Image 1: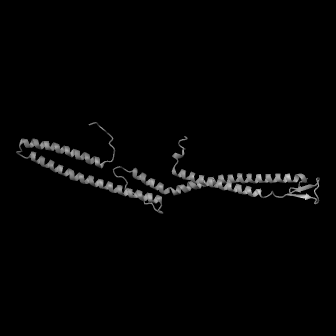
Image 2: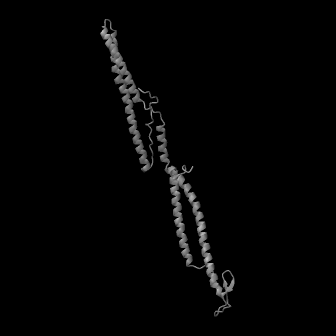
Length: 254
């Protein structure tokens, strides 16, 4: 089960989708980190909202109180400590909110980026799917008449996929000409090789069946007919082998 989902068994579309989503997540993580650092530095130079008001005005008094921004009255000696504590809490809550909500947004946008990457990869690889379908049709055709006349004829910009399709079409053109030449050779050889043997057989048969033919001539003619028949069988076997692309299914030791 683990081997099936190994990266080495992923399709090209899955690999492109993972690459797109991973790149987007890494870029988003870097952006979130930079934003976190900048906000943290900005908060270090600012105080929390509000402050405290010394009440009443006058010379310092140990019993004097201060009013904080939330309306609390505290001794003046504790006001600075409470203000620094409020600033630290404000900074921590702000950064925690930024980090948690930013991470959640990054995950959501990453999932959407993965879906978009899957669709974009499918659209980008559609010419490759067209090339594969054409190759399968040609390979699945009968061996006696392969569909080498088919062409991909891919349209679009002159990019790497278009160049691949054109190269495949050129290869099909050469293969089509080669098979055409082979078929013509088999047809011509069949005529050129069988005709002389048929003429020889006819002449020998006429010679040995002629009235008054000597017995030596008849014996020689029968031997020549046997040799001619063996040559005909040999040529028929060679032509059958040249005209067939199927593998030999039955083997007999000879």
